[in-house]
Length: 469
Image (cartoon, rainbow, N blue to C red; front, side, top):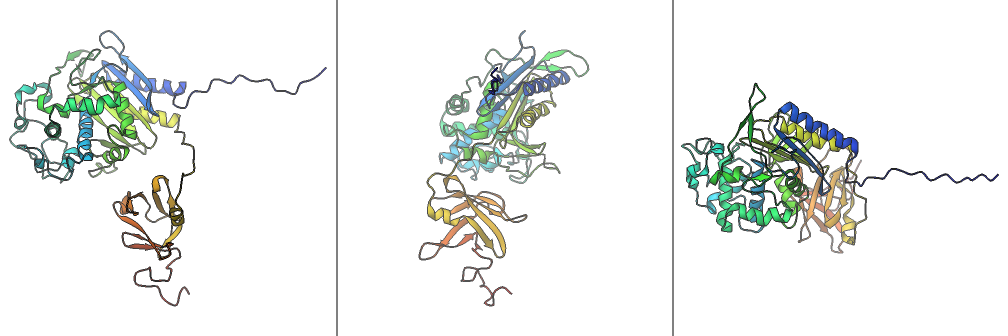
């Protein structure tokens, strides 16, 4: 009898694409969403997760017009509107039409807030009042405030501009007016043409479009509902008017992670994610960038925004380090548990399915003069290493513990600009000898040499002629 040594071929389960979630992850996400809806007593709740450029999970709980809501069901998104308006403002800046550090009054004739810079308005450090002139602007028709001046009460300036973070809804009404002044049309029409359509967000609208959820309040002591009004807020619309869907907001979340050259380049979006206010809370729980909230959760820094209007709560959080974002929308006036639902959706994906790194690939077309700069350098007697990245970028870091590390962006004049920490904005130069070889590095006047306290005149103050002993 002949015995075959060939091992029978085993049928392996189909391998899921890297952007598909595993069944256990999907169940954990559904459990968290369902728990949030039940414990929060939300009439309906939709959640979604995006990763690697597309929505990879969504689910709905509860009831909207007799149906289970889904990723295409519209909800009012409240102050997430502000992040979209901030994108329009940053487009104006990138086009050279405004300077973020110039006062708003340079570009817009406004009765109040004109002394605050545009950056201060974006980051809620303008000092303007938190709310518009009464009655409660979120529940009253914008026709009660027919002119821009009508949004301000008797004491519109509550703090000196630039002193502290004080959330201001009227501040974003002014930014919407700025967009209208410079573009010559309503800010939403500009948003739709310049942002929503390029990003594939057709269901993000100024008013509701079916299918949509109706706003509800839930009685605090009984499981009964009360309809909430959904009014057109007029001049205050740029602070919180928009309606959207989980699918659309997932596309926006991907934009906040990666940028999109049709709307804003990645470096500008990264600028929006950079804190402009002091971290809030003794354990650094939150800060604010340019139109984006920042929070630290489970050791991860997330960017995004929350939103609420009568009858609605929304939340969007993205993890740039992991490339994962989550969204949740509900038609409930008060739902303080919604943010933990969204951050838990992000955490679940990150912990269940850690990000797969991109394959390492060699640089293409490295200049010999740049390659010569890499390797060890010494600041005095302290060793550092300089590394070369793509696009002629450099990374300088200490050998061992301690010392200042930073990334550097290549400039057209042959220098580099620091991007991090102490060296942010500082200039790095490679000083060369007459024969073209690198003599030393000059980083904001600090000198780095190839040997510890290398003799030869590069080190300011000179080096003891007796040498090391």
